[in-house]
Length: 416
Ligand SMILES: [Zn+2]
Image (cartoon, rainbow, N blue to C red; front, top):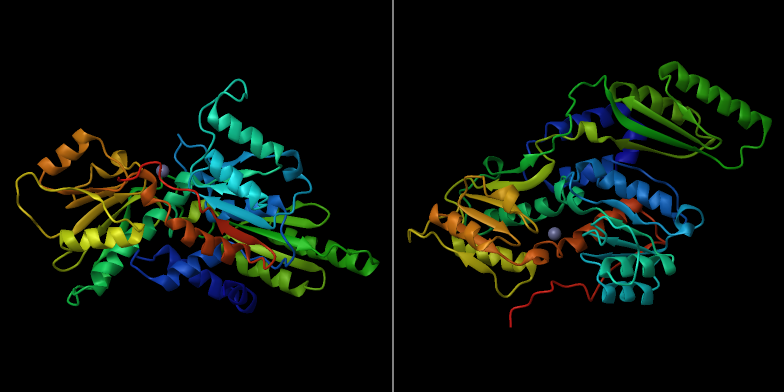
């Protein structure tokens, strides 16, 4: 959608981005789709190489959004990955255990995206004694690179925590709460991104990448290329030019001019894309954890439990009730997928929802008259893989690329 907008009328792009910037973070599937669409446009139709995949992954989940403690991005890079590897089957998993790695190998996948980083601790040797190192060794032996988005996927607009928050809000708005106003119900990050949020349209906020056609052999096309570079240089001095690619980091208010030049040189341009840089992410939309507030009377605890069970496909969850015995409707929820204690517990809400909390953290929350729902760590994360698969398919837009989700991946704990 955004490709057409950009090519047809570049002012539309700028106004669209402005809408995104000032989006008040209400449930809005159209805006969600728009957000995804602004980050990249690709026209290549053959199977992408590894570098192209990584570039797209990093545009979806900028690694700067990950916690400083985290270990994200390309974690295993076999020798072929940086040169010849064409990716035609990506394997998605929440946790890359040894059985899951064997599953990926047997499925003939040539790239693995593991939500949790399989390598985390520093090490001075790589041996068969440590599980994570055995996994890395086997992946390298099978020429399979591994990428992990982890907490950057938690943080983005439309990421794991938004998936949970939006499901709760949708459940509320569609279950006998007709008096509630969707526009007065909100979803906000608990810990907004600490990255600088520039509101100035004159600061560098976008990266344009222009790919020339590979067969620019004629003198005429070479002249056209030189002319195009000259035109671009008149607007922006910081061009990075190689034989077939130009990269430009530019401000929003120069985009329209730049795109007009690209359009006027379509005979020598194979494709181009425009990535919105992290600096422009709104702190209203991006960050760790989410607080959902409901307009109106709020959810009952049974409604909240019902929604959580359906979303995570669980028969049972663990519930902590207010220790004062006073049942109440839930008008606000602090949530964080995985292990969310450090993110959610300082918020004043009626319900805390996460994968795991300690005994004393649960006691303290319930002593304050609140509810707690814990579901075991990865049960709060794994269901998002389907959403992630859809997101990747739309962003990569490669008919020859297959993305499959692990069947063996599961939480290590079960209720028996
Ligand atoms: Zn986790």
